[in-house]
Length: 485
Ligand SMILES: Cc1ncc(COP(=O)(O)O)c(C=O)c1O
Image 1: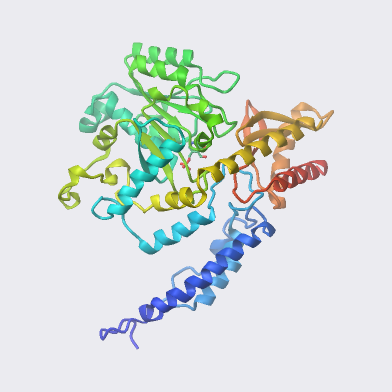
Image 2: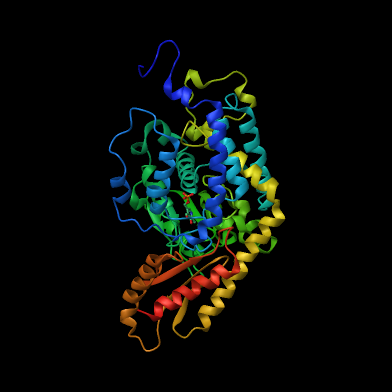
């Protein structure tokens, strides 16, 4: 038999007919459910050494179909030990990347439907569901109706889109036409608490790394609006053109929450674009008691929150809200003849709202999560995480050998091991050893950080699989390992 028989026999396709798909899909659903049930018994962080997984894989693809069982056996043997388990209930590193069961089911459907959602015409339902579900979310988090949403793959992409739009707005689209050589040097502003995606966006936008000023923060880690004002005025006086300020709700290091009511008027006075990065903390805006975080949002031009972090929507799903979609579209739209469809002025073609042309049907999983949980259950989950973080902060504060280095903010805190009588000069090395030992141990997984020049350990609660006991267990593990150092 030849590899491809012109009479119609294609071995690979015969082998993978619809019945095979049905049978294997049922098996995989069982596999997925078993994975979820057994996840707690796995080490949270992968224990593989660099290159170990690659070394276990053949160096080229097979010419002939392999048995499904062989592939699954290799998944168990090679892949799983090489994975860090983000859905593990004792995963307290970074920020969560939750995949709740409804969102996983929606992803299965998304994969099966495999719609390419670049234009309204290539997927009308996906486009209109994106508009509708993002408006549901807008209302749920208390953003005013002046915001219109689009789903990006990540907050980094949303921030890049904001920087690009701000660049064009600041130059009245001259840089779009002639390039940055034709305009005054542009500037951007964040704070030391701002996520690194801003620096990346500024560099990608061609503004140059030095265009970014990190405005100092106050004792609460909020960007100092008076110093922002001064920095913008100094740049203007030097002939530069301030383009964008990025305010943060929920900084990655210590959860700092910028004061929009103080920053917004500065941006308005100088005509500077204000983007709000609420990638993680924005989910907490579904809680009325946290809505104070967006006091002053009226002055913001765009806003990003990642439902794929804390809200339970499988990665990737980043909700990007803009006040003037026309500016975003003008910045990013390119219209060759093959992408122009009749009647397009009456519909949304989301390909014009982001960098990639091709887009997945991401609204489906947001729709599933919002409908199958309802906002009340999501609120309850977030409130539990916040309460457990406060509880943990109390335990750390009460332990004479540890110190809280940043207080519980939402579901994030940081601390360090500072045993009584230890030489303060040895504490950085001690905490580096502690975090490495804790993460090597496998029972929990945390992230090291440097805060105010000191090595600290971040603890972020956020997995939908986490129960109160898991937080207590992780704290127990940390203390046990610290004692042995
Ligand atoms: C405040 C903040 N902004 C942006 C990001 C980047 O998110 P993404 O991975 O969606 O680009 C993060 C990631 O943790 C974050 O914490």
